[in-house]
Image (cartoon, rainbow, N blue to C red):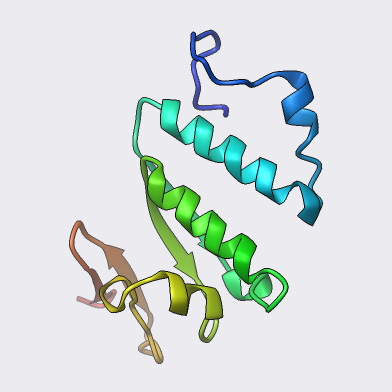
Length: 127
């Protein structure tokens, strides 16, 4: 919400009452995701959203919430990058084969993962 203008007009409900419904509990996640989706719709720019360590959140009890998060970010003006150690059950279901990039191991000298418009590529730092 920090990216919104200090004052703007929108039919969006950003009242204190609505914001207070988002309290960090799992029960408030549906409202938090609706609020995030509403804010993403009125932003005047594209965002890059990085969720690092999704595996810490990914289990049977969070699958539907994480799927809703992916869907909310997909419907906004966002480019997404999720990182996990190992496979994510949620991302296995919610992303296509072309959206996945797996790194089995990195060069011991070190490598950088570079994002481009179409693909992820590995670039060796030594070159």
